[in-house]
Length: 247
Ligand code: 13P
Image (cartoon, rainbow, N blue to C red; front, top):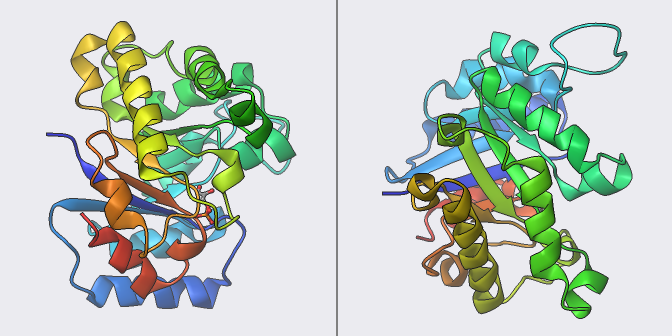
């Protein structure tokens, strides 16, 4: 059985106090047993988050450098993330690709580094609006996965979660229709089965892009959608938990 996962990507939001309030509330809340919750706060608060929610929620970082250590001012490594007790890293978010010029080559190195550090990897992919309008969306996602992720070994894939996030749906209030999202998730699973047939049915594929309590049920009903990577709606405990209760 694939894991059902609801993951919150906070991006550059919340003060330390606001983050701690969120985690204290989550710690006291009843969480659905069959759903794994993950939260990706600012790296500044990883230690606090790990300390508060302990084993109830997986805590991870939104980014890392691909080297272990060295003269890379402003960067953090996956081994540093692991050293504070966090367990996951997001790689390849479209904001990293588009605003910080992260290339598939760089993302491939980051993906290797994250799994080598023993952390869970959420690898993001997704097309831009003009690419969908030009019917290029399947090709774009295939290239992102082939060039950024599919070099990992069968064993390493045990640590991989894929997130399909169409760029035009992120933060825009425009969600992919459940059937368009399902078509892409099914396509991604078919690509996985060409690379590592045995992991294709075990790898969780999350949808991201204006996922809210209002549309999560319809999305999560689809056979190849195993949960969500949530931006805006993950900043609020009740919305986040409502999404987690949408399976
Ligand atoms: P929104 O849910 O705010 O559209 O963001 C999605 C996202 O980018 C999650 O990584």
